[in-house]
Length: 225
Image 1 (cartoon, one colour):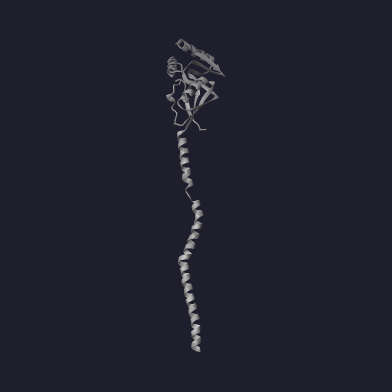
Image 2 (image 1 turned 30 degrees about the vertical axis):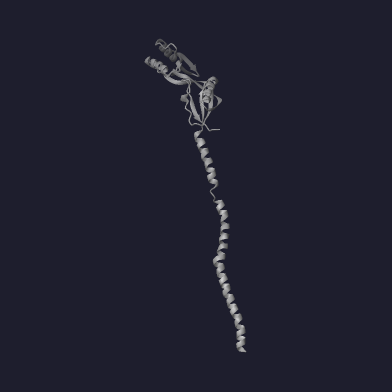
């Protein structure tokens, strides 16, 4: 009877042991093959936002546009050219610039117009001294000399010359007569005419245009519109 009981109870114990062994095998298999796949899938999903934030796609699309803007800014030159003495001359220069392919607009402002090189004897203390200086100059052959007096300032003018060499020769003749003459620029109030010039071909060379050689022009770099 004892043997019969042992035999009946022995089969269940074997089944339990086999069941535990099978469970261990399944658990090991799950850790080795199934669990890594699930963990990898979770990690992949969590890295997606990081890849989007760090993506460099937007930068390369914008870089060519920035380079093109920089190249355009380098090529484009905007100048204010002047001053021109009257609207007729300004229109003539504007026509030449437009014919060369530049974009031109005209503006004006109150300023001073250059008249010429003024030869004069300055800082004379009295009318009597100015009269003596004038007599010395006229007797020496400088018959165009005359006295200029304003605001208690007396001087003798020997003339205004557009040509620098003529002005220097006149001053030298006065100095030879014992009179200290100086040369300075003379201006008069006038409306200045300026040309706003836009070039996409770099710096504008004014020497290529037929301009009045006695007119002093300058180009001022300005911001492009």
